[in-house]
Amino acid sequence: MFLKTSIFSPRLSLFLFLLTLVSLPKTIIAQSKLDSLRLIWLDSRQTDKAKIEAINAAYPLLTYNKPESSLELASLHLTLAQRQNSEEEIAKALNECAYIYYLLGSIDSSLLMLEEALQIQLKLGDSLQVALLNNNIGNVYRAQNDHQKAIEYFLQGFTFIEKKPEEIAYQADLLNNLGLIYYDVGMLDSALNCYTKAFSKYAQAGTLEEHSGNIWLNTGALFLEKSDVENARIYLYKALHIFNENQSAVSKANTHFYLAKLYKKLNRTDSALYQIKQAIELNLAYEKVNLLDCQLFYAELIADRDPNRALIIGLELKDSVIASQSNASLTQLYKVLHQSYKATGNPAKALEMHELYLQFHIKELEEGNNAAVIRTAIYSDFNKKLHKSELKSQNEKASLKLKQLKQTYLILFLSVFFIAALSFFARYRIGALKQKQEFLLKEIEKIKRRESSLAVSAASFQLKRDKIEAKIDRKLNETDWNVLNLLLDDPVLSNQQLADAVHLSIDGLGSSLRRMYQIFDIKESRYKKTSLIMEVMKISVG
Image 1: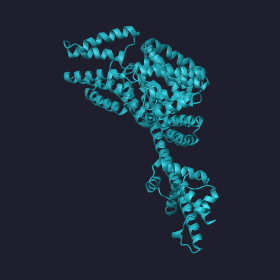
Image 2: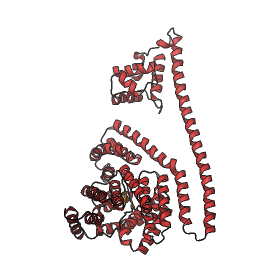
Image 3: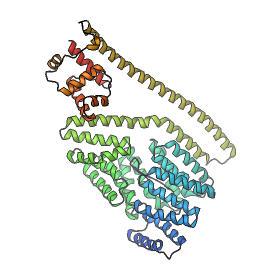
Image 4: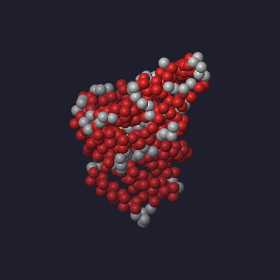
């Protein structure tokens, strides 16, 4: 099974092994079998071949529940395979290492392993294994939100599977993964159609017991996205029942996570808290694969009830969330911090967090909007290729290729037009902002020259501290006064330059500026420093 962990989205896709997987037995039987296999690969009297066979049999029992524990085993597998000079086993070991790295969020390492395994299988000429590796690489690119690359590799993988129509189970895997991509771009009906077809093909292949839990989980997540909470609840509890049976800890944790989101939609906070605590406990017990996102969601749930605790959790998670570079997670974090600071009586920090929340929320929205047209075109093209495999006559295939070629040119034309439009808008926006800044600077010069008519040169214009303090009915401290005089000389000084000049940290300088923006009632959102000095100069002249 394949889990997306870079930006937490616990919907499951299929990461295809280069070995046959079997259904997981009960916990005690599985542990007993694993212990027996461990005795084989640790026995120095056993041959390398016997050890490799034992390791391959152990992966389904170990990897998904305890990926970090399995990484050492996969490294041993790779060493034994290299010693045996078995390229087939080297490729298997690399694929398993890639799978484990993926579960642990090391996406770049996973991709390197898969690309190396792909080169080996291309050399061996094993078309089925090449197809599976292309599928896995596509999943990695999906985790990186590079849907164009993901589709490219899924298409390559499908080409090989298309030549082997007897591989029904692998066709089902591809449909499941395709459904997840449709889910990513909001094409929920198409995604549900793919899940339904995948379920049917797994049933035909006789592997439904192994995969039905993940299909139910994905379907439940989809209905939750559509706000169909009743169907979401049905499918999520179906998935949970299966994961309780086969002891799939990570999948079970993901199901609890979605149930927590479901109960939050229903405003049943106590139930949501119970579910998210279950997810956190499972993550703590099984390698902490999705612990960060579970804890962040927990903090969001308790922000109203226990803002002090939510604040502590948010601050503890802050560095990790920033490191994730996920706009969605950063939006959620700063929302929690804003609510917590506001509830604990710290309006200044609450305002700061709210500004950050808006900043990353806008980025999150832009992230989706900028790729929407291109993604839709890519998935439409892929869907046409998928239908092509069902056509029976050569003439129909040729007709479809011609249609696809026309669509490709149309998409290219629309893409060029879209990019050109975006470029024009960006240039227009930059020009407008530049004009705004130039206008403010000219206004400052006018004020200086107006004062010069009173026998004061524009270059020697001085702020009138007594007038300013009388206007605002308070004394300016020396730091604020020094900042104002520096801005008088150069209104476009950066915060860093100002901080260095007045011997303050960036945070200290920011505090000084925010205080003066409030005192002088500065509403300008982009050129606040320029607006501030212009207002102070008007007071000095008035």
